[in-house]
Length: 124
Image (cartoon, rainbow, N blue to C red; front, side, top):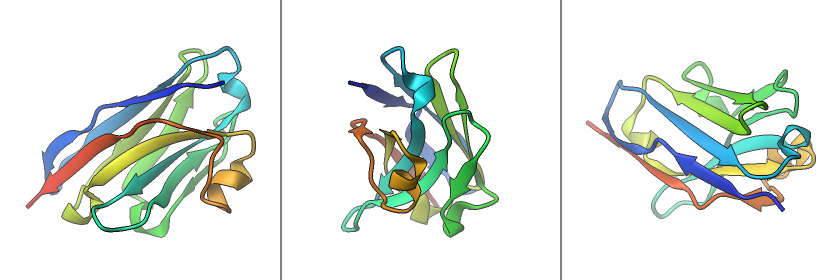
């Protein structure tokens, strides 16, 4: 079992930045691919970003490429999502996720474990 706890959400003006963190429990964190998803009001959950188990491979949805960066620190059992140049359309609940295979996250938009989410609100 892996428990995931997100933090770092909040209210920010358009053009601003936020960094989300996701702390994972357990001693096997470094075996999991990690991902970020978001769900805006009235919309389906969508894949945002993913990072492989070693941290060497990263993937992003087109709408955030060049603005978001995901990384991980396996020594701290933590994954990060740095969000820059935020736009109102980035407003959503952001979820951290873990999967045995990065394909599950990137190709199937799924995961084996989910956090409860953190709200990001971007105002004009």
